[in-house]
Amino acid sequence: MFDILMYLFENFIHSETEIRVDQDELTDELIRAGFHHDEIYKALAWLEKLAALQETDIKPYFCKGISSGVSRIYTQEEQMRLDVECQGFLLFLEQVGVLDASTREMVIDRVMEIDSPEFCLEDLKWVVLMVLFNVPGKENAYAQMEDLLFEESDGTLH
Image 1: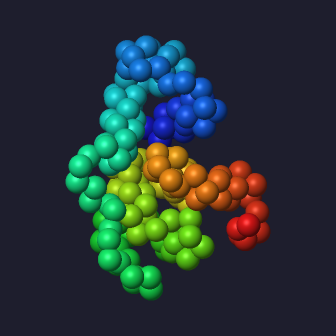
Image 2: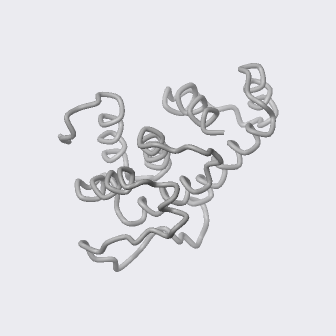
């Protein structure tokens, strides 16, 4: 499923190519690219849920009143998916202003929905990028995350 998300992001979303609205055509194209129907369905559902986080009247991830300096305690399931390196990276992104509490929770939600036995820091970076791309008003954070992902800098943000 994650491979399909990466394929879609790199070939359509990130390249700013217009995504076809017709899900059947998109599914056919993904099948021609070598992906299996079940995995395509899961990936498209994952993307729909990501979009739904922005479109609902009740936005559970838009946390109000959370002061800075509050630590996020990860559940046991989250700790199994997000190792210490990933948790530290999320904290780093919050400290430098790429993520706030709301976008962090959206990232964690999307990570937990990825159906993959292995999940690493590089995968997390892509999920962060996908989430930020879908959040209005986070263009600067998206650009910073894109720099972190593609330039493999020394860890400093401009």
